[in-house]
Image (cartoon, rainbow, N blue to C red; front, side, top):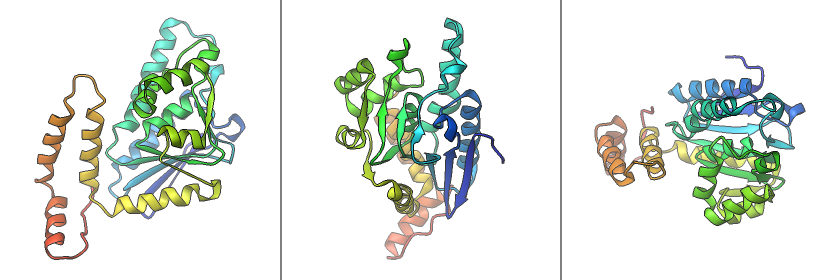
Length: 260
């Protein structure tokens, strides 16, 4: 599938999606959000794709925010619909994919960019990364899940300060806060993400998908995470991956999982 604002490449079990709007510092507009949805959906439904990596083109920005020119004249209903549709087709969608998604944060991740990174299952940052939610400086608040996911990751107090000050933190602060898992030099960013992806791919894709569902359940209103874990644990016993994994263990050999 061809895209105007992104690139999607597949190699050795890894789908790498690159937001390619360098003149706009990879800012998110409605077309880009739709294309990202389609690329994530395609990768998630591809049985050969075991891990998805999302990054930005160039060396300056992962995603520098939303394209403000698109919504500067919106009214109340327009704004609410913008947030609802964006969360539905991209941010919540990514969070709940069965395929692991790693955000390779290469530079600025601001506003919608940080919200996209936080919707991924975990994040790796380059040393030049800067992260923040500057929306209140524009008279709005984060609308793509930022007020919910940031406190989950860094705690309520730090999230309140980041949102209220509209300030940025650097990669090392993000690491200290628990917002990112690793920080490396820019030229090492994708290689490290691919290395981690390789470690993930040695394991059962089916089990990983069920683990994602169980972990996410703990953060959803009305969901009993323990109950979801029990359900997903039980379902594992009916999979070919479980049969292969336990047989390989007992036979003292490396498992060859059938996959999705």
